[in-house]
Image 1: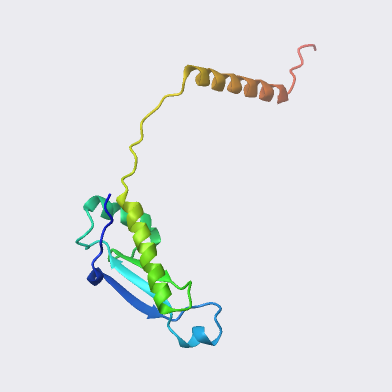
Image 2: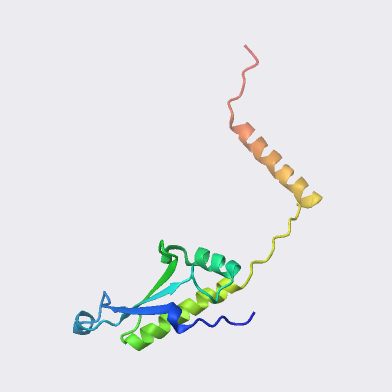
Length: 137
């Protein structure tokens, strides 16, 4: 399937301060990136891909149907922006591949027989654990 080209006007970036280690830099510079992609109203996604994408995104989708990806792995805005775009592209790529149709199968006669034999053996083991009835008496 051909890769989906997302127009830049459908993606927005917001730069925020990253948390965690990083010394003084992390307190001064907004290097973390929040990427927002409005998947629900995107013009380039087909309905099937959109549905799979929203399902794959899971908790990253807000009530408005926007996918929110936070990237704070790197020390620079540019690297974090590239990371967020790569993660969005990967998500869309996964969603664009239709799932394989499941073909129903039946257990073979031998496997059914084997299952019943195992059940019988297990039942016999459990039966041996029960109390012995006293017939003499």
